[in-house]
Length: 195
Picture 1 (cartoon, rainbow, N blue to C red):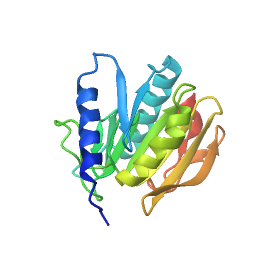
Picture 2: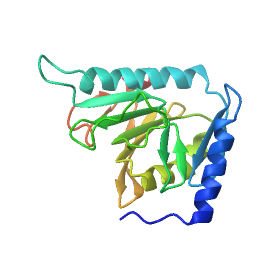
Picture 3: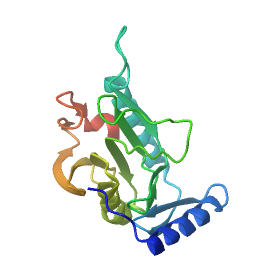
Picture 4: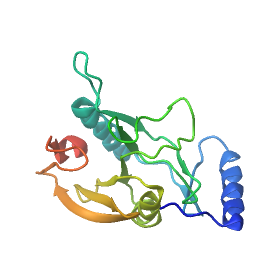
């Protein structure tokens, strides 16, 4: 059940958004549960994993066949906004299921329709934030599932939203394939993402 946001918290969130809008080009800022976050630019290793993850999922779920439209729409680094959770986040990859809440208007930013799934590729400079306040914020924002792609430990960790909290699921190692919700039984080899 959605709860109203206190007026003073909402004013604080909007002030943080104004700060975010005025950051110079190339500065990466986000707001997670009312906390302003600054992130270093990712390393090429991070970008490679991000691109391979997008490609692997798009190939399996983001393409229709014949007259059948695709089941999923994936986007790299969409900006998500949830006033209710005082958050404005940019996941590395996000996906919306056609049969779920629908697909967002990607001509508008930030996006207010929360994705069914997001992924964060962990970097040494962002891991604590990604595992902490951002994971919590994704839960309160209403994101259905989260993957943490860990390049250093060579694994993918899955989380599912249970009543507004991201609950840890299965950890898949380099020799394994991620399968299960939200993508069903179609396996996604971890080695394909972290090659």
